[in-house]
Amino acid sequence: MKTLIGWSIWYGTRDVEGELTRSLENGFDYLEISLAYPWILNEENLVHIIKVAKDLGFKIAFHGPWRDIRLGSPYREVSESSRAIVSKAISSVVKYEPEYFNVHIISEEITFSEKVKDRVFNEAKKSLNMLQKISEDTG
Image (cartoon, rainbow, N blue to C red; front, side, top):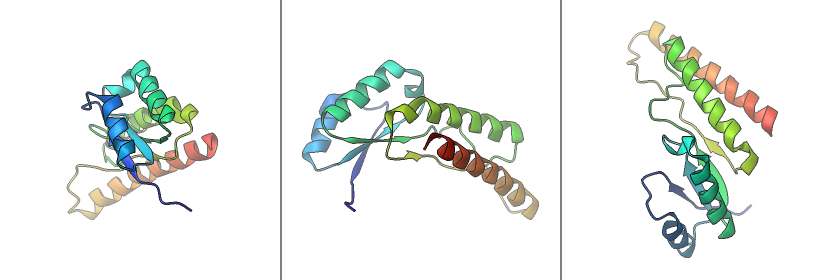
C-alpha cells in the first residue's frame, strides 16, 4: 500500500489553480478540501476545485466543517444541530467518492465533573454512531 501525502485547501486560498499546481510539483498525492463556511454553501466553487484537482491527478478528501460545530457538546440542541450540519456536508460530497471525510468530535466544555464528562462522551458517542451509519449507508 502506497503512503499518500495530502495538502489541505480552504476558502482562504485565493489562487486555487496555482496552489494545486505547486502542491503537485512538490509531490503531494491528494487534496483535502475544507468544507468550512462559506465553501460548504458554494457548490459551484467546490465543483471547480474538484475538477481542477482531479484533472491534475489528485485524489480527493474532505475536511468537514468544524468551526462552530460541536459534536460532543453536552447541550443536546448544539450537538444535534452539529450532527445535522455534518450529515448534510457528507451527503453533499459523497458523490465525489472521497478517500476519506475528516471530522472533529469536540466540545468546549470544561470536564472537571464526571457528570459533565459523561454527558460530553454520551453526545460524542451519538455523533460517532451517526458517522458510522452514514459510512455504512454510503459506502
